[in-house]
Figure 1 (tube, one colour):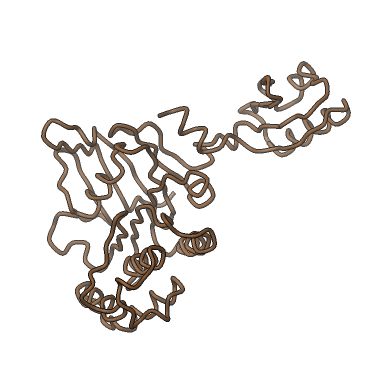
Figure 2: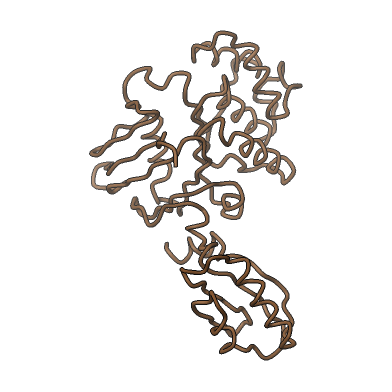
Length: 303
């Protein structure tokens, strides 16, 4: 894996007597889309603020592209940020506003970059529109365009699809997916199915502490187990356990068959094929197959 671009190393943050972050260590590899997950109060917004340089850690170390975010101008032009509750100022229309923000970021051709960013979020036609005249969803997309000004190598997105209709949310997810390899993206969201489909990996937080971090395959145990939903039929559990590559088999009362792979299994796909063949030969009706468990199930089990 490549060198980490975003690093929180034993980072702690206190607000008076409240411990918002407690020795949090998270590293995000270059060119990946990474999720930051947790309930309200888990420390996600505080982590974002440390990475942006808005806050200084009480203890520990924070680095973005090897730089200290608190050094004045250290992240100028290299980090794009979409805060969760970002509000667009109303003193300029959208296009001139983004142009002005591009000038503040030191972009060489701020107006051109503003037009490119609006085109990327599908809002080329709002250049002369005052922010107050935008719907919530359109305002959110303009905020995303602001974060993408100049195509920065690091992008931090807090609830990027919040309040968007399903079609526009899908377009935003596709835009973020296209950034993979071009930029390092950290996404915070309560939409766990969205993060599972979008992210290469994630960190799960609760009460300011790291519960688990890793690739999405590791978090959901995709390479360690698969689940088969059974409608009816007698499950030959003993025969399944005897299959090569199977470590254990559990049948739940709701008809969910959980097959845990032997760590030495060379081909999980071959094990799945053999399992399904055995079930079908036994007259068992299978209605669904999935690898691992959902990210939502994993988060609920941890938090």
